[in-house]
Image (tube, rainbow, N blue to C red):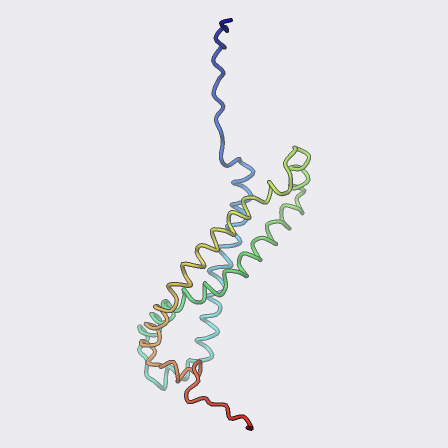
Length: 168
């Protein structure tokens, strides 16, 4: 038996990111970017205040000093990224909870897990950025040490001639 051809159904446009997803991701990214850039800046100011006398004694030129902090930025950002993701997650979920947006989404049939999917996606992107910065940081730190006229041993981060003598 031959079937009658079906009427062509209108094609549904599959939307990858809904307005809610874009909103949650935007709120997450605002806090994440401020934290990921603000904390390293704060660390740089603290380090500069702690070590300014050492840099003045070594007569490090101002340009080299400023450039050294630029080269130190990847390591600082790498160290701060987990805290930035935590802050962004907590403050985003807190803000949308305070304004009852999670309740409205759940009333609309959106599960909490679907609601936080953009946050999970943002955290995964931060992980990729962190892995990239982790690979870049040792190279930029080597340049920074040359600019500041320091060696690894002088910074106190490596042990030289370390031996442990136990009783036999």
